[in-house]
Image (cartoon, rainbow, N blue to C red; front, side, top):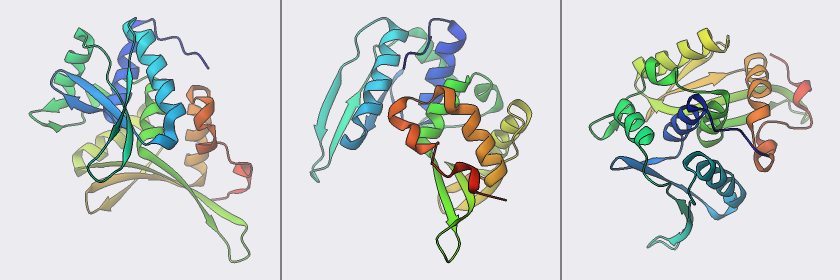
Length: 207
C-alpha cells in the first residue's frame, strides 16, 4: 500500500506520529526499533521514510546482550525532523502539547496507535464477545493525557476516557468510540497490520 507523503503537511504528520510512537531521539534525529516478528511493519516505515526524505533508509539487524533481536532503522537527518524534535522535547523528556498534536494527520495517528495502542475483547462466560476495549498506552502525566483526550474530542469527535497506571495516564475507549476510531484510521493502516483493527467479529461488540 502506497501513501502520498509529498506534501509538507503529510510529512510533518508522519514524523510527528513516529515521534509519538516507538521512535527514540538520537540528537536532532531519531531511530526506530521493532522486534523480528514485525519485519513487514519495519519495511512499511522504511518505505515511508525513504519517500519522505527522498533518500535510502537502511534497516540494520541488532542483537542485545540478552540475546534479543531487533530491526533498527534511522532516516537521514533533515531540518523538519530537527524542528519537530525541538517542539516535542523539553531537555531529554517528551512533553506532548496540543500544538504538537495539531500537526498530526490521519496517517500519523494510525502509526502512533499501531505503535502504542492495543485492542482487546471482553468476552462472556460462553466465549461470545461482550465488548471492545481500545487502550492508547501513552503513559504521560495527567495534563498531557487531558491534552490528548481534548485533541481527539475536538478534532476527531471521539471521547476517550483516562486510565491511571504505574507509568502515567493512558487513554481508553469502549466499543462505540473504539469501533469509530478503528474505522477512521483503517484507510491509513498498512496491510501487514490490518489484523490489529479488523477482527472478523468487529460488529458483534456492544457497549
